[in-house]
Amino acid sequence: MCMSEPVSFVAGGMLLAGGAYAAWKAYKINMRYFPVALMPVLAGIQQMMEGHVWMGLNDADPDMVWWGAMGFIFFSWLMWPTWIPFAIYFLEPPGSKRKRTLLMFALSGLALGLTLYIPHLANPDWVKVAINNHSIAYEDTMFLDYFIPRELTYLIYVFLIVTPPLISTYLHMRLFGLTLIAVIAVVWIFLSYAYISFFCLLAGVATLHLIYIIVHNKCCRECPEIFR
Image 1 (cartoon, rainbow, N blue to C red):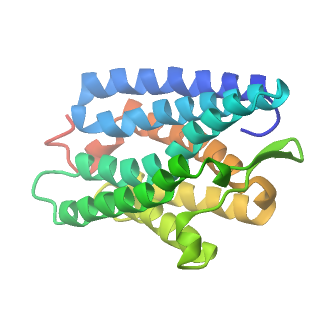
Image 2 (cartoon, helix red, strand yellow):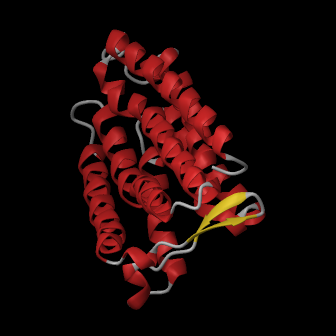
């Protein structure tokens, strides 16, 4: 996250606490919410990983920087394009015609994520971390850079994480999709110098919207027979 090591750990702790509460509410209300409830938890763990990147940079410890960065981009490149569509798929009511499409999005996200993440394990020098304007910038090489422009990779990534909530049966999940679009727009216009870090921070904050949806059982609006 931007700014500092303490802020990363505090933000991570708050997301973990909020996600734990959402998971408990999901257990009480309907377990269909559970994968969605885990998204703030995952965002919290990701912020903790970036806290360790800050620790490594502050202590001049390249090993900690590398494994912290690998943990952070695991969520950025592999977890989010897989988990977001899967969580929306799991939430969909039985018999929904959208479920098959959402499952295809999840599998496509997994394929993209593995393609982006796995090569970094074999090429540790592809991960380059630096502080830029009091924020962490991850300027790394991607495997797909050898085949397509980086901008196209980003476009595919954004499509895979934004479209699933936008096509959900549930109004409030579609509103969450609009929240993600707003996050992407803010990062693209104002915070491009450390876009990966800021995007994951703001997307983590956006998961507070999901906690609101679960706590207030907003999916009951469309499917009261499931979410009583």
